Amino acid sequence: MRKTIIITLLIISTMILTACSSQRVYDTFKHVDDQGWEKNDELTFCIPKMAESGYYTLELGLRLNNYYPFRNLQLAVIQTVYPSLETHTDMLTLDIADSQGKMNGSGVSLYQYSQMFRKYRLQENDSISVRIRHDMKREILPGVMDVGVIIRKSQ
Image (cartoon, rainbow, N blue to C red; front, side, top):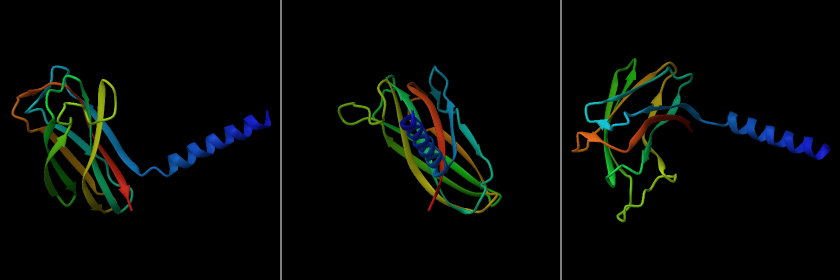
């Protein structure tokens, strides 16, 4: 009985310490239409005001299924920092599969990817708007399930 209580307390303590040390301040995914991601369908993420000044990294998250037909994915990512209106456009090429067609992300039939693409020095109360669209030749892109933005506070 006493051993069970000690183990339970250790598990709870570990969970609390892990939760408190997380540097993730924003993590949101948006679902893409099941019929495919249209080239003119721009996904917009409105990141709320930062609680404190510091350095932050922006990551792009993707969830793809086996119907994604290409080895890479080209994306246009437009970020605007408010209130300064500082704007950056990043053209990203993500390696989705290797030369043999094996998917690089983690998962079995639904693959998840995450790639850091920009680091910002933000002030308290700065917010960011992130707009993402695919820049592939095909008008409707199958196999993309979700697209997300993750922001972490860095040292």
